[in-house]
Length: 397
Image (cartoon, rainbow, N blue to C red; front, side, top):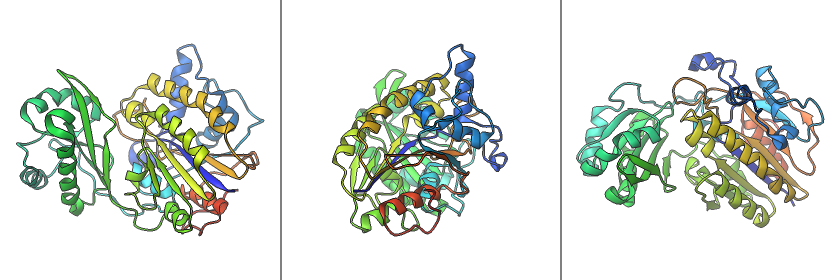
């Protein structure tokens, strides 16, 4: 029986890529800078499970430097390496699709860092069709910050909060109770049709709860995404009779294309609990794909170094549970989709290498060469599962 698992630590980059200067990201290093900042506080960032698998060694291949406090130099237990993105962006969809064999070699549309960010023709039409009194925000922003900034006025006025980022995205935030969750979803569906001429990849519903300047986003986020332009690894597995189990926001990112089953979780640890359950249930020729989103949305974008470090410690502590449940024929890759260096200026993603750490009962420990496309990950898994090869990428094992 052969099964594959993709454990994606959203935004966990290993250092700037050679083309990072084009994105104003030369010198960014999510893992390296977190380790450096934590070590400077007097207590090194300890990730014993990931270190033994070869995380720091993979980061050294990517950046040329060993992360502060990581001393192991040999005896790694996984096939470890790093990969550079062929896609032109540094966004969620591009990273995930390329991992699954479909690099994004066209340019997404983006909204400018101006105030307002959105064209008047777009917001006027959205206001008319959505039957709302207007909008708040209309700028580049961190989601948690803009919700707390405008939450009171939103509740009082009924005006949704709209904002964007360096991603190809329009995000709409609204209070689940005063505005209504279904009404927010309907507004996002309208917006998704309206942004099509602008070549925007996603519209994201960002519901929240709370009162009096103290608001918290809920787990009812929903992404309305453009579907991949070609069949991905998910399609190849499903079309060959295998099951594709999507945990977290994976199904949204692929517009449900190639997905057999969707499993949700409110945060990283809830998703890890779900992963352990799926691990027991998944059958032959199954692909389980999980996105641990907290690294990105809760800590990377918010530039919270300590929070990011603690989330890594929690993940490292749980991994042995998952590893103990692996069966003969299982192949796992731990990876990311882009960087989001919490020490970097601004609040956007950073153009970085991603980890490729393959492990399982039959994986030979080794250092892998740096890949020139994330699609090497998907092609390796396609080969392992015995499904139709992908159009891009090479088998690394």
